[in-house]
Length: 207
Ligand code: ADP
Ligand code: 5GP
Image (tube, rainbow, N blue to C red; front, side):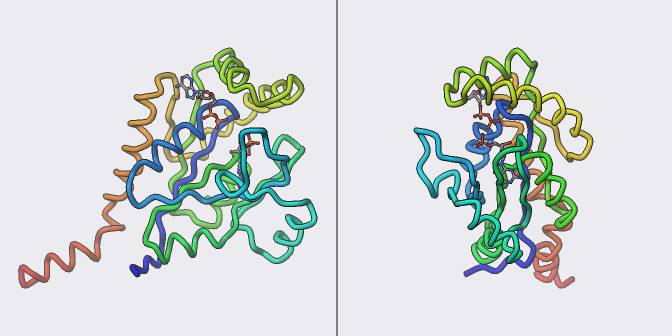
């Protein structure tokens, strides 16, 4: 099994309805990518089953994991439910040599950047407020109250864009998908991640 001491981590963040889940799917189409499944205290939507996008846990279990230091990051999102990324996903990425993809909110993104400064943070920006509202409504999964809460938060979250390494404006789905994939591919080519391989190649030249 390959061992990568320092897995490449991608943070995908942005307001609700900006298209994070859609664009994370595009990243996951690339080989050697791994989605970190978050834990949440939110109740599952009708279309959701545990273990695919989330592990649904009780507040007591979430608190236990928090106290035990099991989270890489965690946050209370929309002042309501708790969400967190278990650290074990980093180990999984390390042992499999895969790139880890985190779909998390802006508070979590800040924590991961603090703990893992080499993580690549991608911010997904929706084209307009009206478009976000249309998308959340068409998804048909949130109550009017929940939609109002998410829209109010969206503006505040957008102001956090300066903390990110890359911005993808998700107006055209296909172009945005190509952009997120390009960011992943470009990060894999960074010099600091390829030095060892180049040194090996140099050796074959007698260097
Ligand atoms: P988020 O994960 O940020 O909440 P989603 O990926 O669930 O957002 O997207 C919200 C809705 O908008 C979904 O129904 C999705 O299919 C749709 N959507 C995503 N990107 C686009 C786009 N570029 N144009 C139109 N609709 C989109
Ligand atoms: P939803 O309830 O729509 O699935 O997600 C609500 C918000 O929680 C989204 O912004 C999503 O990115 C964020 N989120 C999902 N998982 C995590 C996580 O593990 N940590 C943090 N901080 N946010 C998360």
